[in-house]
Length: 184
Ligand SMILES: NC(=O)c1ccc[n+]([C@@H]2O[C@H](COP(=O)([O-])OP(=O)(O)OC[C@H]3O[C@@H](n4cnc5c(N)ncnc54)[C@H](OP(=O)(O)O)[C@@H]3O)[C@@H](O)[C@H]2O)c1
Image 1 (tube, rainbow, N blue to C red):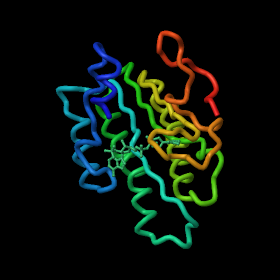
Image 2 (tube, rainbow, N blue to C red):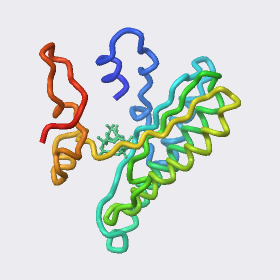
Image 3 (cartoon, helix red, strand yellow):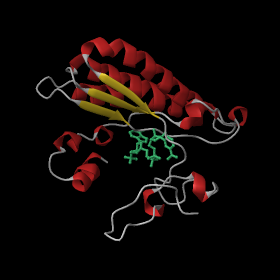
Image 4 (cartoon, helix red, strand yellow):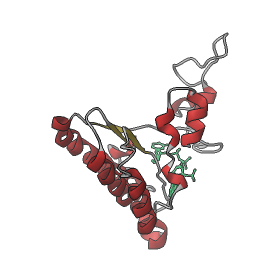
């Protein structure tokens, strides 16, 4: 994803070249350790960390096997905590941490009980870190997107007007995307 963003944004965004998801399976503790080690490479202190990796599992909690739900906790919470800790040990004043949460942090949803709880964790964790890191001059932000069609078929059962998707935005005459409501 980092290399895709660098290609899209062009020159001057070299800080996006580190794609930690390429280094490790972040649902595995050993993978988190190797990714955290990459974050803390002393010669290249990182100015921006975006903890985007996340996954969900859908279904009634009690009817699902634990081995389908625990990896969601490992990735969305444990890996995030490990990477954030590594980042904050080397972050310099002016650095920024962006944790990707969800609107489900505020509105738990039956059928995604564990996922929603992990996003509430990310939101609460980020708020506390925001306060703790202010004296160091390090910015902490929790991003809480609503349903977003980041890949084909995702949220196909959700009314289009509720789903954010760049490809559904009206195009300006120059071809660039215009903001505003998604087209139904
Ligand atoms: N889409 C939505 O409606 C929505 C709404 C609110 C919040 N969010 C949050 O936004 C973030 C991105 O979601 P998305 O919709 O873009 O989902 P996605 O298309 O499924 O992408 C998930 C990302 O997480 C990475 N990932 C998944 N499992 C991993 C693992 N075990 N180790 C390392 N990386 C792993 C994937 O890497 P690979 O590409 O290498 O597989 C991918 O970059 C997530 O935190 C999600 O919870 C999404």
